[in-house]
Length: 125
Image (cartoon, rainbow, N blue to C red; front, side):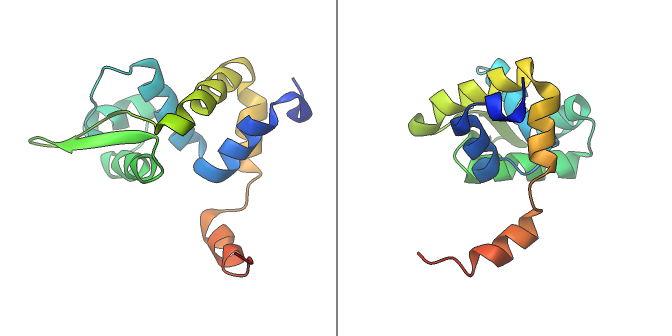
């Protein structure tokens, strides 16, 4: 599937909500295991990143309304998208499963977050 064949809502979601392939992998993991709660250490082993990096990715997903967390002896994360994001998140997970390279390329071609934040400061709102 070419980049143009990836639905526009999936492309927009990736632009607005996903900063890295690791972050998307975390979303996919949670999406595919919606009743499981994950601590940062377990996520880090599944995502092949350090525990601090896994926790940072999860905090971003929580802040963006794609995951939820609760504090036990450790912070536990689970899939929990806001209602309006759930359908598009499903489409993103499906597109990633079918078109891994194209979706990853879209993510890698995005400007890095600090550059985007700087550019956003000049947008008319």
